[in-house]
Amino acid sequence: MTETEKSSIVETLVPLLDSEGIELVDVEAQGKTLRLLIHKLGGLSVADCQAVNLLVRPILEVYQHLVPYAQLEVASPGIDRPLRTAADFRRNQGRRVRIDAVAANGQPDEVQGTVAEVSDGHVVLTQAVGGRVHVALSRIREAQVQLEW
Image 1 (cartoon, one colour):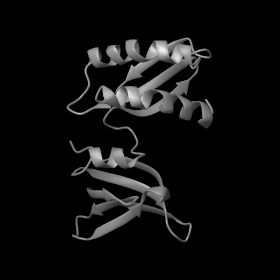
Image 2 (cartoon, one colour; image 1 turned 45 degrees about the vertical axis):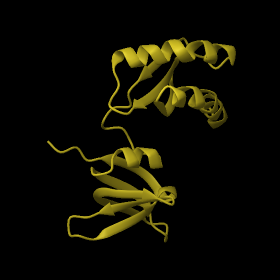
Image 3 (cartoon, one colour; image 1 turned 90 degrees about the vertical axis):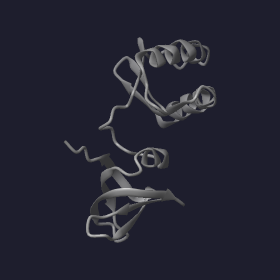
Image 4 (cartoon, one colour; image 1 turned 135 degrees about the vertical axis):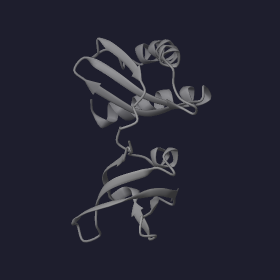
């Protein structure tokens, strides 16, 4: 799937899903499967995924987004999925995360901490030693919630 195709699907579905209280987190293609990853405040049920599938399938067919795919899958992105957007970090405020970023000098930089706030294109982490670290969203290569067992 090209970025143009992905953007077209996102632009088509986001207003509809937003009106239903559903956030479109990501769109993925794997083989002959088009996968929509969704989030709902309070959590998703299987029934929510089925309802979204029934809601968006006709729209995707009209715009011919399903032509290259044999299957449409609607699912939760899961607790261990990568954090990519400001909304992802906002949803995880208060949770411990690991961020791999590119420092201003171009070198890799890994930071860990608890998401304290997200604003103005930055994530602010509180670290165990009491410091605060600001990381520009544009410099993040990969980020994930650090699950505590």
